[in-house]
Image (cartoon, rainbow, N blue to C red; front, top):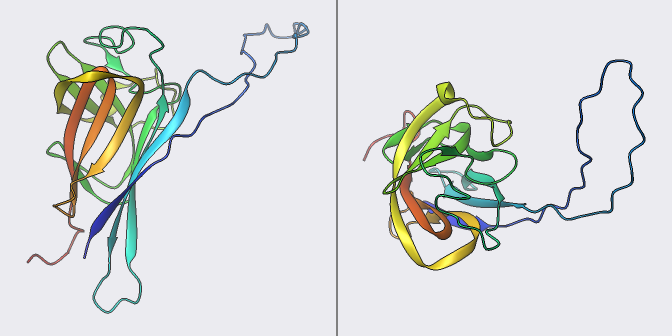
Length: 208
């Protein structure tokens, strides 16, 4: 029997980093003033589901994880739609380092096959639509986007939330009725985008 379990675990990042400046070759580096500790403006958050199965004759179930790790910005009184999330421009869909999707099983997201692996997620907000961008490039800063590495752009259902969300969230929501399906929900401000996902059968699996 298959089931999906949800784990949403926001993690506050508290990293102190000195600014990086270009230095001329051979030039003496000026002394840097001490900087007091500070908490970074955006933390990191993770949403995860685990797919479990017990093959016939197996003593223990097997498990495969689908995880999204993202920077979590906060509105702090600023406009979200058309501001922090610009219209008609690819957005990093988070903060700081790129948002990463890691899946140990083949998925279908919005009708697009996504083989097991690691991807970066971006999005493109229009006045009346919102697309999720699945990109093969990984490990880059969130603002470094290479359209030639896109796997797909899939349509999300765009809704307006009556209660504004202060913090950006991404949630993998299991169906609850279909054991291998669910919805990915993005929320911030009054924006809410959602797209269905499902786990695909393993290659060579018997059909019933």
